[in-house]
Image 1: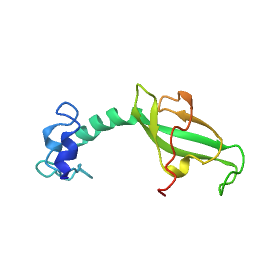
Image 2: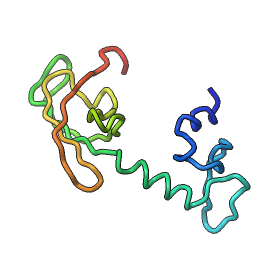
Image 3: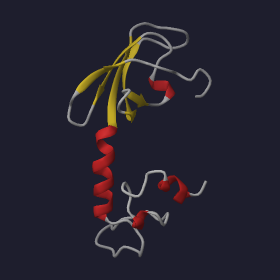
Length: 123
């Protein structure tokens, strides 16, 4: 799949044509931007859209289970389905045993989260 194909899935309203050329860059130290490169405003617009979907996950494995020890950790994830409340994170974040976990959004709202699936094979 070409890079432009992945950007196409976002739809025309979510990303402007300057980002569709597959060359994402921004100005640094006042250097002039290359033609077709993303500007600082492009980055601000994209970040304003995606940052609210990013969460900090606080997990506590309440007891040792399988090869994992009990303990607490912090990680990140992002909302992939707002309606169903599904957050995607890395496999190692969700312990194989019982966990107590919360997600904190950028506005400091905290919600309890529960594991739905943990891939038993992938690292």
